[in-house]
Length: 385
Image 1 (cartoon, rainbow, N blue to C red):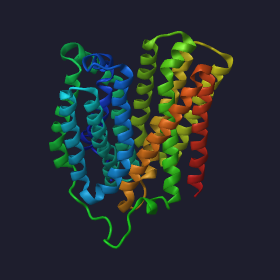
Image 2: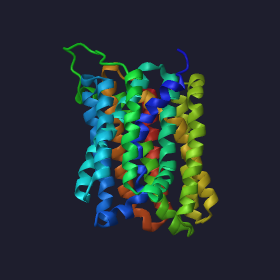
Image 3: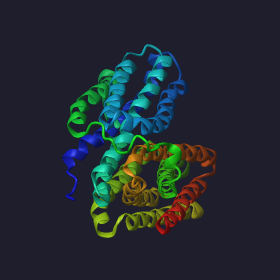
Image 4: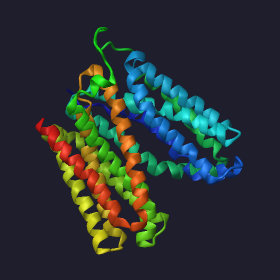
């Protein structure tokens, strides 16, 4: 099969990107938003948590209904929700209404994160699917890095409400691409065949691969969420150091992910997963060493983080590809459960790390290492199954 064309992949990647923009774009505006709506920052923070909870739970919903509605109709429904709630958020007069609209917006954003991997996995063979999913991952890694910068500019020019107007406009712009690139309803199973999460969860190979990805993704989010506090406490540096670390990490992820498809063609998805896991193991070993010897220099910390992100760039797309290598009738459910599990494990890891932060770098590094080691054990079992 020919290499997947980027002109087909990029619009699909943009679908997941707009959902991420819905949060990342307005993060710099939170203090101003609180002032304008006559509330406090902790209450405004609920506009983020409500979105994330709805996004996680919506994965199961969209996974269950995607084949019934069809891939195109599911994406149209999700994008319509993003556009409508973007307008509603921009016009919100109080924080309670904004929290409600953000919850619905999280549900809308969940449609693309379920459907896009399914479309790519069904359309391409293993190695080509790795390449396609890699480009989606690259888009998803770039947005958190640049969206707050764009959001700050918008805030200074026209205020926080314009961020939500932009989300609504971008969602509407994507509608023609959905109609052009996404097929209508496909019948992938007979009416007598039972398609449900209990049936999917009987597939032990899928469960292992999904847990491998969930632990790997969870380890990433756990460290990213802890890093601002750790950098300030551990090195005495400010937010600029965290921004530098993120830029370096995203750059190394992009380099590795952009090569993942070609490497998958040469060595296969499992060897690529194994190579990425080894790179990540070296990176967390470096973080643990920094915590033990208490070397408070930023450079080795950033280097370890770049290695971790490079390992994820190799490992993440190939793991998703393997996890979605279920019968086609189950791929929508598999995608929904995969992302639900990844978001759930991210939340658990972040919560545990919150209790460890005041002890410094070492306990957080050990937590991240434990998640990576657990994923490697499951990955080995999957290969031998």
